Image (tube, rainbow, N blue to C red; front, side, top):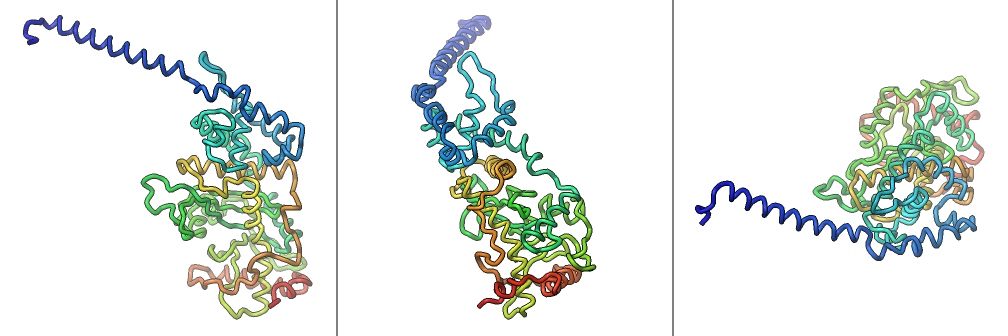
Length: 410
């Protein structure tokens, strides 16, 4: 039937149809633009939680701390550091959310672990807007503050950490306590069993080196839950740098009150390998008294890392929930929480109510007699270093009057 039309006529018909389709698309776009903000969220300037509750919290220190998990001074200091990164430009269609409210939304999520939808209703914001605010704010926290509160230590810093471990926890030549924490997540799409762990849940691993003052020295976040703590450490950037002596760690130091020099070491549990720079407990049952005392002294210093995870989870309740989202976004949330932990402790100090720094007690299994034996893999030097520490703890120079009572109690 189109044989009657010339080519030019066909072209004009096609152009007219295309213009009609474009006009229909433009009408639909205008309809969507008329509803840029849902009617439910238009009440945010009047009924949103930030407008109704935040001014009242500013008048009550206790309630402010309970809501944001930090003091007002710390909040404003954090806001001053992040404000430029959180600012957005207003558009013709809408006014952007100010930095203070964006920070409040992010901190409330970290403090409660509530879903994006729950925070969406309380703050009168769209769910996707809440998600974008939280992820972008956490990224800003990491980008701006991480190097300030978690810098790469130099030799002087390692020496300070070692001295503090001896004074506070009576373990010499120690530059940190190492441990891993599984953070439960929703199974990522097409991930198979990569994130499935021995606890029968999906997780990513937070591996942390902790100083004696309950702060993070270094963290590695994002490893698959199926991997062991020891394997994650060996393959992490921190583990490789430590193995290759690239972290400015002093080579050795004399034990207090002696002329015996030993390398600087990290204390860890049975999940990690025995190295000349990493001490783990003696394994097996029926240990001699001097080995049990060594295990107690090591466990007493090592528990700092477990305590830090407990403090972190109590402050930021996202660690009690199953986190949803892409693994890379979840990694950013966890890293931001660790950075905030250090930032808060530097500005507020330690809360003694959340710590138990008794010299004579330690929760959990101090004796570690049921540890699996490690076959091979540990050099003779590592065994010699551990035996020297054992001898020191059982000598007049290194023993403590409470160690036998605590370690050998039945």
